Image 1 (cartoon, rainbow, N blue to C red):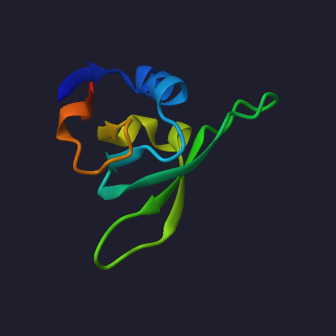
Image 2: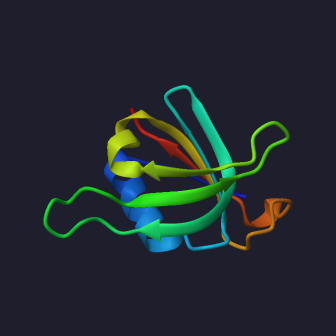
Length: 102
């Protein structure tokens, strides 16, 4: 397991550079916890700069739906991201925990 601390803008850059389809991606922001598997990543709109949306298939006993998270909209509310590049939810050896600076 690796733990790192990043600013909100550094978190955006980390996701853009490292998170791919089929990776395990769990994000905690505000009062939301969204654990799941990445289905897709939509890059920012070149004209407006809005975007970097991560589509996540939620994994859970009660909710198993797809959500789109616009990281630019929630970047200042992100508390923690847990990322497993291998896509194996039980692969604690390759877990990367990113905590946000306040």
